[in-house]
Image (cartoon, rainbow, N blue to C red):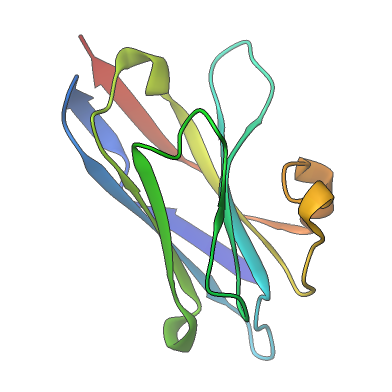
Amino acid sequence: VQLQASGGGLVQAGDSLRLSCAASGRTFSPVTMGWFRQAPGKEREFVAAFWRNRANPYYSESLKDRFTISRDNAKNTVYLQMNSLSPEDTAVYYCAAASSSLILSSLRIPESYPYWGQGTQVTVSS
């Protein structure tokens, strides 16, 4: 099982970025996919998650107005559209996946996800 994240980079405050995360593996079909981020010296923070068989994603309350998660089930790929970026959004962004449908209370917990991508750096300059 591999999760390959991409799309990070250096942008200016107010810009947008779209991250992608493709899941691969011979028989792997993730049911729950999500994004976390980790800034230097801070704990890993939940951003958003998507269930394969549910229409509505789940967001961190503080980010839901600027970030949008979407998913292409046929490609086993999840996206994170980030708008109005600020320096506070600077972090390594990780995608995560689980082969089961995580319950709501587990979505925000990194340990709930068995599979992780390598992370992609997002740096927002002021």
